[in-house]
Image (cartoon, rainbow, N blue to C red; front, side, top):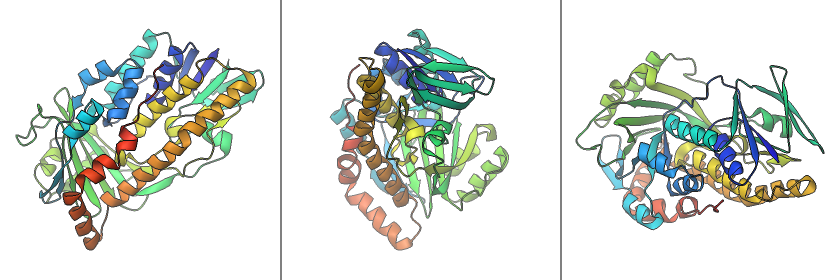
Length: 392
């Protein structure tokens, strides 16, 4: 049984590994000429680490990343709101959360996929497909085609496969833009050995700082602004904008931005999608951001793509054909969509909470963080990070 995966990102490679583990012949088609994942840091909560264990790469990821040992919430002036109960979570789930460079995680998945026999073809830009009783046929802009028994779309939040299956889906703007950077920075209050860092909250703005592994730090800023503003700024202009926005903030915020080369700073508007009612059609299905782009406020985008991959492979381990394959894909939707709907909703609510602008609302929120940290960050998140994926 042959499977084609469109997209060689974290979700696509995770799916390739999972399907290969249950006996499928898997080919990944990636439009880029070089399979390198851009971006900054990615947080891997307990459910992500457990998914990576199922995919047989957790040890390498933990070796290259940094466990989160400290996680503080502060005001923009530096007043401590709370320390998140990261030790309690680590004990409850038998693993801490980890931070790793997205490119490092991607490289680990890529090399493991090749090691276990996944075929990866680069420079293959998807242009359309035909689904029939004989199989799914994919077409590429270079004039070539490929056929398979199963087609999995992992082509990101602006998925062309999704648009082809269900019509164009309009993304929802979050109301804020993200700026992300990676650099080298040391502060005795946040030693490398401790791991983790802080998130400082202002009026419609926030700034996070964390250790990333290999001596590097990762920072992000989220700034409320109209959609499209700042889209065409140069890296130097992005850095200047960030410095101006956070110049009076809690130290070390301005210094962290100042220490980051413009070439290591990225910016983009943040979007999600109203959850789809269906991900599958015939022998074609969607996973990851192609199926359910979500806001990054719970750090679950990558984790949920990995969960998708494992659940899908588990349902396809007997290599169903014909109507049985179609039914397996429907079961995949039935298992995953209810969970994803809740996480997309929670991520959006958390974003609204963290990006508040009203002074009264800010006061109420900050008080809640001080007095109800366990309820907000352990009890409410347990269904998300406490998830146990099946063993393949």
